[in-house]
Amino acid sequence: MPHDPYKALYLHLPFCVRRCGYCDFATEAVPADDARIDAYVEDLALQIRRKAREGELAAVETVYLGGGTPSHVGSSRLSMLLYTLSLSMHLTPEVECTMEANPESLTGNMVRDVWALGVNRLSIGVQSFDDDVLSVLGRAHSADDARRAVEAARERFDNVSVDLMCGIPGQSGKSFEASVREAVELGATHVSVYPLTIEPHTPFHRAVMRGQMPEPDDDAEAAHMEIASRVLAEADFARYEVASYALPGRECRHNIAYWTGRPYLGLGRSAATMTQNAERRMRVQDGRVTDDLDARQTAAEDLMLGMRMTCGVSETQVERASALLPKALATFASLEAQGLVVREDGRFKPTERGWLCGNELYGALFDLAP
Image (cartoon, rainbow, N blue to C red; front, side, top):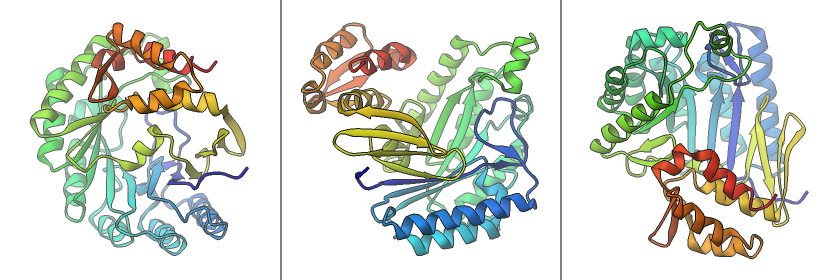
């Protein structure tokens, strides 16, 4: 269908040195020298060139290399991929280009190589700076590996994100707070905090079902999120999205694109593409349509996704949506009465309680267009 230009590009590299016990992403553990990685990366480069010829990359403003573990595929493959990208689109400094990396495979040489080829933001999957917690998670790196990786990244990059997890069995508030403080002290400019969730068909899910692992404690997770909020606020980080904190100007523009209804193109196995025009929004994954929304459903989804952001949605957007969704204003008034939303500065913003009760908040908005 004729569609609005893609503003974000996601490239999926589905390979890891090992699969973590909690992971349900489309990844597989493959040795770094495996020929399957070569074939996959070469095919991904062909897809990039094909989309460039079709004119689909001309308006892209953010690029994200995710996985899996992109750093696991090594410098030479990453260099080939990034070189292809630079020939296929305007990979200027104004384009935010993020690459995910894990500490066990991020080296100083790789940092220098990807920086020289246009990556300007690194997102490092640290999860914890506590070796005991890393052992529970089954991570392939140590706390010292994580420290070295962040320090290596900071030699070239002034925009470094660190992922941390909380609510992990055996993880104390003291341990989690120490990890948050260490991320700040090492020079991270962005921190994402994810509570552990037990996904079906993962080793952690099987362990919980067998009684070998306790289920995550909601109270512990909430306490850890409060610790993150306090410690990061003291360090001048602002929470701009339900799971993410950043120094001023270091918010992840690619993630914001997802929450603000900007069309994105996904290339690689299991990567999702969102295509839209004034009448319709579609998501496609591996050639299969996963969402097909009309204009009313799109307007409701935009209100719902906007409430993942600290800034929420503007009163103007809600009024505009009311033309398609007559109950929108009344629903926001109800959410405000329940303490899930606050109205200030011409915007409807989620409260902390709104985020903690996300099912009620998001469900009420999405149900505006059954």
